[in-house]
Image 1 (tube, rainbow, N blue to C red):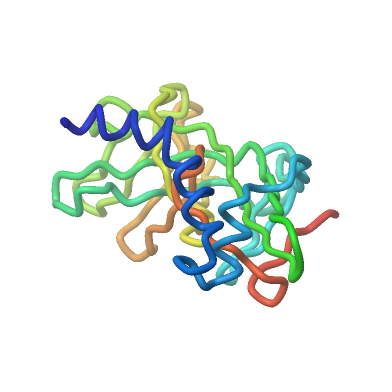
Image 2: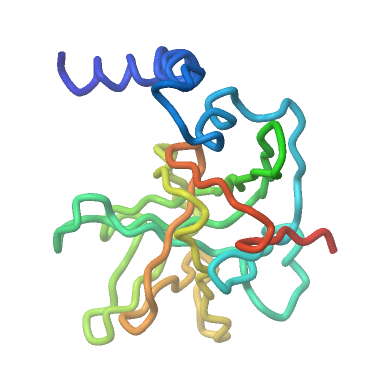
Length: 199
């Protein structure tokens, strides 16, 4: 099997296999894993604010008239080399998904608009300061996948000389953090770990 075939099998068969495997109490002792395997509840909640890892995120719409920009996100390139591209995006929607049975188990999905990560196509790096500027009119359709627990907001430069096509997203002294567009990794959160805002 090549990589593409493995990916297809994971997409089509993994959830069914996981559900069947996890229901066998002799194989899976952890009740949280069994609850996850049964799948999420059918209803989801959409929230404009989400707190995780000490950061407060806003959706783009909610934060449009706010004085701080809390909807920018960055994902470190996955091959961990000097030539890997980082992914930059803007948070459009936050969905809270809950799983059955008590105690309450939930996770958040961040839906983002991603921008082309290729250097000198969708991004530019300042030669002296290593600041990355994003061409926000160059959308990217192969969204990276990460969990919201690995996220942080990115703040665009509000300086008046900024081009409307570019938004600085990362400087060397800022840590890179991650988010997702589709589900890839899921962490079950309990209320003491995260909280979702509704105001």
